[in-house]
Image 1 (cartoon, rainbow, N blue to C red):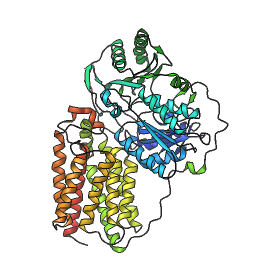
Image 2: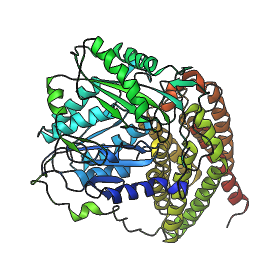
Image 3: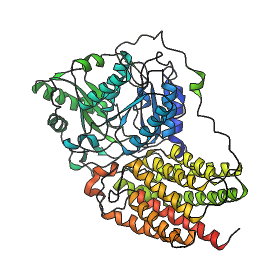
Length: 579
């Protein structure tokens, strides 16, 4: 269980503040995460890593000489937002381009890809390598769909070693991909993890049982078994990984036995004793064994084993000295060539552009948008526990928390922007940016796409008609499907969004008022969201749950339907009581 917090909503921000205060020798805070206190020499490739908080020492604890130049740090178990990643990368960039690396999760992929495209438009060269080491999360012939767990360390360290050696961006990315291809991990858990303020863990394991092949965000395992002896666990982990020995791998391997948060080092040493013997019996040469915490899952009791298969190049790069807050190898001398921190790097965010006032009609619509966003936030508050319970079965348990963070940030931004005289488009765009930035994760990114698309159809002059709103929703639907790569039947919010948009467009085309058309479409979305209970997930973190999620609706589809219904109520009230 988690015992110490102030406001759970502030936990990640306060954790980062304390982490920086305790490690000022290594890191300094920038908007969205941390970068090295002493930046890398001019012209060197910057390695920027990142992901949700709750996995310490990943990701901020790995920032320092010989390893990462910066870490984008999202909320607990939620991807950092596009804005956060962009900010950290800008601060870490030394002129040689940026290599992004992160675990292969839908929200991380969406947000890192968006930040990468934004940086490229600004003239900064970027490459990305998603870590896919978890063999439990997909079959070998679908290795590109696997998620990243403790193997993050081998990929990050290899890429950083290449950057330290002066490799250019293309070669740093090549090394990162090579390291990823030669990394395999497999884990078990004996109990779930409990987020600050939560009344129960994200999943539970019966007494004397263990979950096999779990995820680091609290995703339940793919199987369950009696807890074996320490030797029995070692044999399970080693046998699963040796069965997936990379093609062409020689006999050199780095073993990493990783604690997930609550398992004691002494227990892991007992397990590693047998792992070392098994590897030696197989004829493998063990290089630089690791036993400790490298990628945790808050307070989860469990462990994972990673095997990193070296070749000559990787072996040489692995010897690069590293000195970070949480991870040290070799002896690191001060880098006399490191440039001084630029003053503009240390800010907490980019200044907001000035608001151009909308005309009187658009300001009136902006005030309606404020009411709509208020209703959205209230709806999320009412259903937060329900969404969390659903997501614990068909996802990773944080959907309600993420939606609450996002909708509350959007509400604040909408109130402030409308009060400054903004029109409808600007008010909703600012709300969209705040939502995606604060929520992070997949849902944060997708709700940012939805709100931004609708905002573009509203404009800051005049009063948009029902057709403009329907067109905005249609554009949002296309954007979500393009951005998230989900289709109907994948068990995602798309399964509710597509029928909602189609129904809205049909009703508006038939001459129905916006409020009535919206209510009809919301009813269709509600029906479609409920129908996702029968689907097998084909996208996102729920995909690895397989049959475990059948019988539970997709949380993203369900929350979209709830929100659509709440907005319909606001529109109906205004239609019946025009101001």
